[in-house]
Length: 275
Image (cartoon, rainbow, N blue to C red):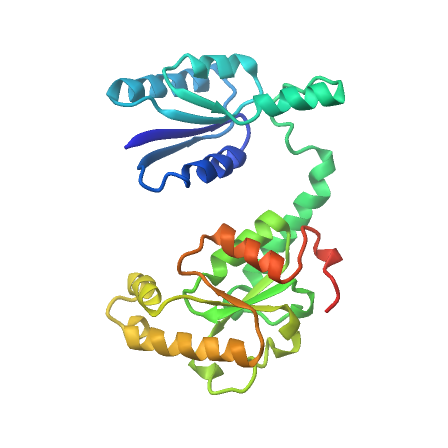
């Protein structure tokens, strides 16, 4: 198993996202992952360098994905016996040459005042997603950019939260249950907003496995029940012409990308095209 470090002088989200995207291209490799955010103090840098050296002595050189602006810290990391993949330095050099300016080297500058509006929009989107998770609230569904409809445990909540946090979209989700069938149309609470609904499905075996983790040996998790619920859901999607996809073999990121494209959404909810 190869040790991988996502190291940053900020939150580490960029290092984790880009680093994980690169590692995903090596599905047969096994990684032991470590995230080190807000790296700035001498003590913190020394601790990371020591950890890297111990990993290097124990086996293969650890891999470091770094989003660190301070050249001194980057140099310390490079001398720790690790393979350091700097995710920022080359891009800074290109931008400096193009803009004729020197990049600010202080940490914590990734999210300046210019991002405040976007930040508050995303926080509102997260609050909206929490309020409208799993059909808990029907309030203000008219404001939703997307309403994800699916049987329980098909990936509604993770996809909802990802779209809210990363794109600032107002996303609700509604669980299809036995009470929603038989029906010719969408459940009453979401039917008025059919143009914003998107369905999820999966395979019966995958759904059964996921549900067994929550309620082992229950009817809810049985293969027969999962097969029935998925068949009814997919029939409903087709009858109502609802776009849908399977979450069985897709990551949350992939599903979100498909939803954005299918629903013609952008990273500005107030600019959502009229139906």
